[in-house]
Length: 472
Ligand code: PFF
Image (cartoon, rainbow, N blue to C red; front, side, top):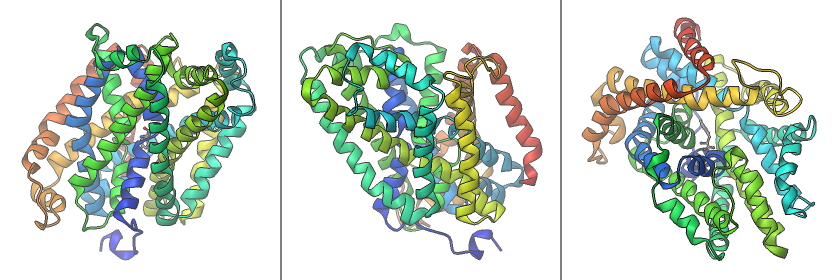
């Protein structure tokens, strides 16, 4: 008998709740913190166009695949692969590991955001010229960022320990619509500033000279990171999805909302940035340095806008990290037969330890290097540049070559009761085009990347998982 039949599995209470939770997972720091700075570094709209191609031709197909695998098996990442084909357990294990590692730095940035929300009213904006130094001093301090990170992580634990419906679903339903309203509010303010037009043309007139192999990997990695793909998160969320739901349609809604949020974040930031004559290629400090500076120059309303912005960022981050924690928790519940609360506490304690190392690597532990990078970059680069893309490629190969076409068709058309006219196109994409495209882009990008030893280490981990994961 299948595991799923033995216990009553939790389910999303409503379609709206599922969409909000899945979109909440997708929309996060990736959209508001990372997408704008990658766009700034990689030449504006040229990067956006490549990113959109990755979303349409790779991301959407993989999301449909992940939902299908999750719902068909009613199991989270590891179990889903394992029940279909035992030698694929490693692909699920890689996903759980990716979730763990992303949670080794994500709550650190979530904590910064929480701190900035509060600091916006308590003096952050009083001296605009000092905001850059303030950021540097804040993130490298030994104790204060740890406090905010722990607070941020504690909110995650409280919600995930409550379970899927009451915790994650309820939080997403309130928090995600709030985020969209907040972004619209900031966009109006930003595009109405004098000089905002050059920001818009930066966003919509491509500069192809900045595009390289590294840009392609950055865009592909960003597509996976932003859509929460390549690590079994959407498999897990799909496993709680009712058999009546239309998977392709739900996937399209989530992808559209995620893309909209990223574009909205860029339209909120760049016009104001150009209006104030600032540099677009600011790197990861973009949000935390430039945005408060912009708000500080807005006069009396500045602090209010700043609070709203960082509240939105915190909300977005929260609904994503909930899903990351859930991937690990669901593994412990499904495969290790652990009780939900216990699983949540154990997983989050390990994550807190990794986050402490990541946060300290900004200052106190700056000299400690793993494979040539600090702890923060170690967790970030390993997941974003290696694990997620390879995880996505494995999912595509698994779906295309190891699952029955008939079964997939049944899953995606709810046993023929609804139509999915693009099934053949989707099937050919996931079977041939997507694995090949990811392989080529990953190969070109990995070859262009500086941290060779870290890349080799990542590949070594994947190989080790292939050998040892049969026991999981
Ligand atoms: N999609 C999230 C973001 O854009 O911030 C990050 C993320 C969440 C990645 C969940 C992967 C994941 F499984």
